[in-house]
Length: 628
Ligand code: CUV
Ligand code: SF4
Image 1 (tube, rainbow, N blue to C red):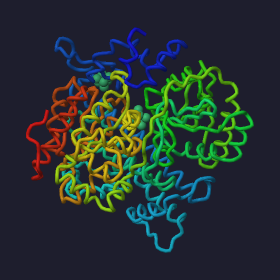
Image 2: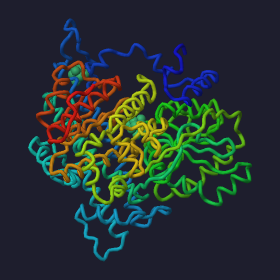
Image 3: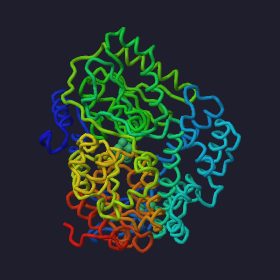
Image 4: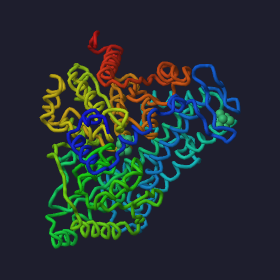
């Protein structure tokens, strides 16, 4: 590798482990990215199509070569279809994750999932009420059974409209109805997107993108919302808890187990197994001082939020964490798990275990976890991890961990405010807090790891904008030290005063990627308290380093919900100026919000600050006329 490690990641652990990986001749995501350059310009612009086998086709962006595919599809149609399928894949991923949780809830209700219980009964009851399930005099398991059945209906086609859309402000619901984009069934919208984008179905780029919004909304106010709420019911609604982050969370003298993926169903049971006296005794018999469970990516975020489990790193750290030689086992479920991991692990003693019937990987042993056997399986694999401890070679854990606080569910945030969003609204009205921004999404080797998240977040809090973050962005900001009470010293005077008084950091860890719906919940609460729509609020979203289809879907449901959203990496749409213009300007007239694309986080911060001041002005609040 010719580039300097400092050009690839801002993180100290990342830089040192890249050096170690190079020494160990371990190939990483950055090497493979280099090997792909130059990447295909047609694909980059969204202008290639392989939807049918009259193709593959591509449209020449310079107007010299063909302007249509074999079927006659032009640039607008091809770009819109590609984007539509991207949204469908993201919605399918989150929503299938949600479905898996509903199935566990149903199994728990039937007594067929030993080890799991209903942890948050209050949330079970309030959800049941939303779904029209009577709760009076019923036992929690009966409620769970009926709620699970009602939620299963959300995935199908028997509804006019998803139940949880009612959580949005009335004005927002009207917009969706008027545009005809209120989602009807979670799976239905994804399925319809696949249908519409088959050759010879929907060839209107506007109608395709409108359905794209409906499809994304079926995730944001459907699949992901169910995933988050059912996870809270089964495993507890997060409360603030101290934790630690970066590769330094690994322990030289303990059995280190890393969980990776997104769904907490397996990792919750692994955590229980790691804490059991039986396993701890076994570990001690093998000469280990304990069992250290840590996470990466969003499975890690789920455990961090609910139990303060330490976090070893985000997306681009997932290979490097293995290069420490200190990981005795990595247990994966699904999503964002690089298929390279098995090969990296093979250079060390690390045992790799895949657990989901729908996610298999080279170089991993497959142990299928199902609700009825999870508790036993978890004990079995933890035992194997303990057995593997003795096979370690040299270990390299080059940094000390950083402290962080996680666990900011909306219930907690409102709780910290004294039970109502009113104090936050007063602080925003007075201009002490200018507004709020969600900083979310992945890492991407096209951007220096964590640079986008950390730079943008620093500029926002400096300027009195409260940041809520999720996913790999949240891990980046935790590594940077933004999630401790003392981090108020990075904040502007107003934000510092408010967060200082509440004893919270200026950057609140809201959870995993499905937990972006918690942000929808907060902006809905703010809008309702002010009697306005979400699009009237001084708020914004950003995905400075996104890479995944899921992140594209999140961006679209944010915008369709009225939240101005700034993307770092450009989505593959530049082959159609019609579509670029619709997404960055035209959507304002339809949903009151647009996308912007700005890879430089310094400039993205200015875009967001300007947007927030414009919204403040429109609400009649004190505003800054000159930003930037
Ligand atoms: Ni949650 S990579 S942020 S773990 S979509 Fe979410 Fe995948 Fe991206 Fe990271
Ligand atoms: Fe080519 Fe049309 Fe087939 Fe796409 S759908 S591959 S543009 S013929």
